[in-house]
Structures are given as structure tokens and as C-alpha cells.
Length: 123
Image 1 (cartoon, helix red, strand yellow):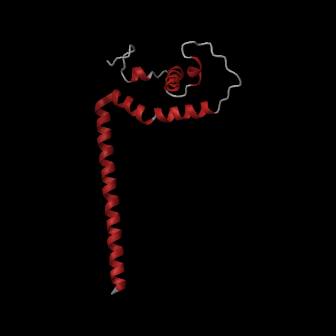
Image 2: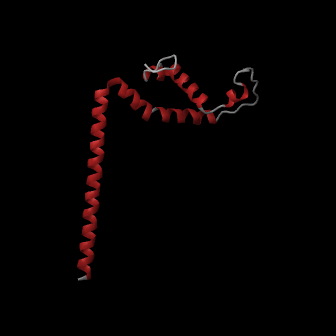
Image 3: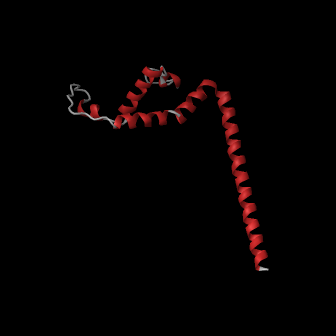
């Protein structure tokens, strides 16, 4: 009797796990289908957003990793506007520099890709 109860409990757990996997996969597939449909409807704007979301952070992380390995023996700062902070800033200014380098290397201007107006506004 105890063996049957354990076997039944094991079967119930296995059935529940199988059902949960099925539900998760159906949900994942449904979300993916909706995402594909949204991208198809949105055209190049959707591709730009997808690129920004999925690829740009990875590329910037690679850029930062490479930049972190560099060393400077001496530094003369002649820019009175940004001074020392501008020379060592690895935050927003580094990201802007990365985007400029990205545009220079690949011809992909993120600002144009997102439809941003050069003057700082949105089109």
C-alpha cells in the first residue's frame, strides 16, 4: 500500500512537471510569435529597436572590456572645457565615443537609425 502511494505520488509529480514544461513552452512560443508579428508590422523601426535592445549592449560591453585593458603612462590634458574628467570619463561620454566609433567603422549611425533629429529633438 505504501509503495503504491509513493508510485502514485511520483506519477502525479511527473505529470505536473510535464504539464508545467508544456505551459512554459506554449507561452514562450506565443510570445515569440507576437514578437515576430510586431517586427514584421514595424519594418525598419522594429529592426532598429531590436538591434538596440539585443546587440548594442553586447557590443558596448566588448568595447569597454577592450578599453579597460589599456594603460596610460602619462597624460597631458589641454582641453579646458572638459579637463581631466573628460579624459578619464568612462560613463556616458565613453558610450557617445563608442557610438561615434561604431558609425565610423560600420557606417551605422544610431541617431539616424532611431529617427532622432540631429538638433536633439525627435522627428
